[in-house]
Image (tube, rainbow, N blue to C red; front, side):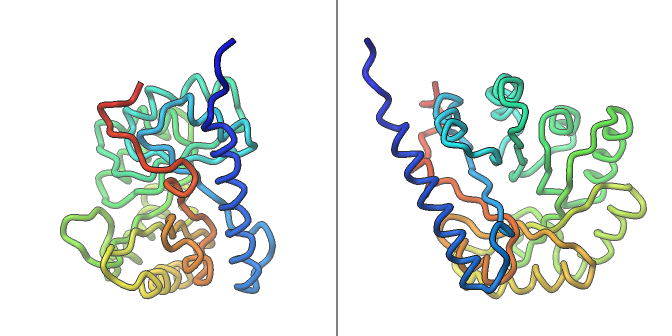
Length: 234
């Protein structure tokens, strides 16, 4: 008989703890119970680890790389059809077709040519994952995302010109700046554009994000622990 996998109870406990923190932060912010969803970030973690989170009842996950997601998610989604997977990392145009086929939400729409490619592929395939516009709230040159001054025009183009199912906005604040300033800015852009979903906040700052209106928080390390080196994945 093989030894029990010690990660099973750890992941279940971590998920319960994070969900409790999300619920408490939601309550303290005066918001309705259940109004904030948890995206469990599984990048670099293998399917065997993801199964423990699914067994614990979790159903919404996030991946950074299209190819990595293709390597592990199709059989999991076939086995667990109620699971939802979000792309939360950059999307190259040459990966649009597999991304549209696999993901239930693409949170990193950030440039006109990508929006056009997504619209064309959705028209071709008939599959329409939800889209979030990534806003580069810190205007960091090395980071993806639309600059705030260009956000309104790009959101309008995604909706009106490309017909994307634009549900909300996403941001990743600069690591060395107060995140609340960026969460507030994202919320303001969403409000003036009539968008109800905000994907913001990660393991270190999701409680702050909830105070500023996050409807999705993206948490990986607090659930799964440190990410394994990419070349050590099974």
